[in-house]
Image 1 (tube, one colour):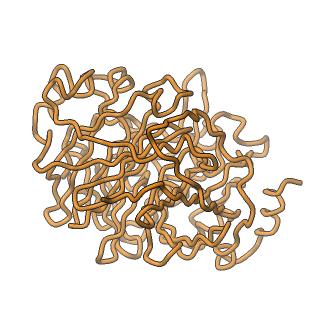
Image 2 (image 1 turned 180 degrees about the vertical axis):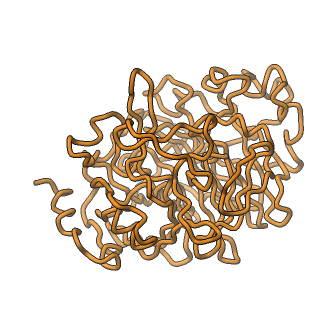
Length: 453
């Protein structure tokens, strides 16, 4: 019997209050492989000072404890996926995290990939955790709900724009849900409300201190109808060209109250092929006072082989986390699923490329097509490398959340995808999950020099 099976037997039938504090005091089993380690003599090394793991909490017990009856069958899936982002909660070792849309995968049927949602009743949640030694305790969880208190779910919104949803075996079609959110970044404002970003719209979501969606800000022209909360078309329409499943992922709260939103990947302009081969992405500045975008910034990825020497596919590059270091300074994560680098970036004054020709989908060449944006007059953000996580032992793959915890310390969280893998083999003959063994973990990192100054 595996260690994971033993932990599952211990959790069966426990009340949610006890499940929230159950955790694992050992290192992660089956940790994701780290590839692409390489020397970089110009960058001083950082050191892992601690690692904590989330124990096994049955997903049905967790979800039904928040919204009764929301999940009838979790198919053996445990709580995970809370590593979409991490944000300090005030007390040392405590953080706000957020799930993504829930367990999902891809299975080929007749040669075409279908998006599966084995637990379609899952409702994305904000989860407060505490890191205690080698364990992660769940302190609090807030389900995301509509204005009436109903679950938002994690299902796709619009037929023809989003992937069609199917059940666990990719055979049973599921209904689209205009309320559905694929949440990623999280910050908490001074008034106690939360701001989240979403991949579907892509959208910026304002959430009450109890998890109720107050407003969802989407691109102009999205025409999302039927949602159970206010939908406001306040973002540039160019974002309608986001790559499927690659909308907003990073979110930063600047000291003055503005937000910075990062598109995960280059837009598909003028077509999908251009986006797949591009290294040019976009960041937006959003005024929470004016409820409007005030600037759009051009950001350029490093070559994929620099970020991850084991990878040669440019489309694997993503921005997963942006963190405020000052009023106009960010920490930006560039990553593949196996490696990541953190850069310091300074935001300039002015509106950047907002409203320019680069915001016109008819422009040719598009911003995404430019091999050298600076030479074409595009004001690309300047960046400087802070740390190459791919050179540090003890850091898991797929780091999606970064939190600044001190002058020279960080907390990193990975996305374990709820233990799911792609393919029909993700579930056994009885429809129960064949767990990947990858755990949700928080890794503490000490940098060789201060982040600021």
